[in-house]
Image (cartoon, rainbow, N blue to C red):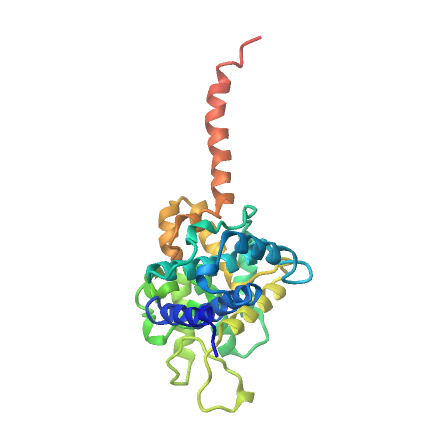
Length: 311
């Protein structure tokens, strides 16, 4: 028989699914995080959740949840889930501690990985010099070009349908996190390679990117999963001789970095990435830092010249 807190957790997860449109993975993660709290606290009534209990839980996450403790980012995922759960309870006038009393662990400034210059060229061209079947070379080239051209999340790329991509246009609509729609734009290269790949296909699968594994013996090829796309990116980064770990998210970082380095404003980049908060986009400070250096060199010389003849 379920305890009171388990029933509330179940209602909260149904709320996330139905009213908030959260993905299955998100709901699965929230269930794990909230059940860890419930088990730690010995399944208390929600009215009995106190600041002292939460303080002890945070110590548990930091010291004992795993042999080495949890990373700060993982601790925050647990706390965010708990905070969202408490907000939900308050919204339904269920007595419990206020969610704003839970503070997140302070995180070190995030450093993003990206590829540029010759490294980027090598990974984008790697499929063309591979020994894969021609259809796979076309598919993988289209995937890499599309990742860099659009900054799509790997889940968004995997979900694309043929009908959603018009190769005569340079834009398409994608549904991102929270079921939000946004416009992304295709470079000439991405559009051309997607067109070549689609025209070379002989199947009728509605998915844009599919497996071409003859060993499967299926009448129609299956969809490429996000995990499959991650393996494809990793394979070509290795073949291109890159020593850093490159993922589809690295290509997304590269897309944002390229935009900012070439003069795009951060608000526009936020919209193209589908970030709900500008704070998330501000991790790309490595680009704005370079601009600060350029500003310093340009304008500091002018003030410096006033003193060149001073002895």
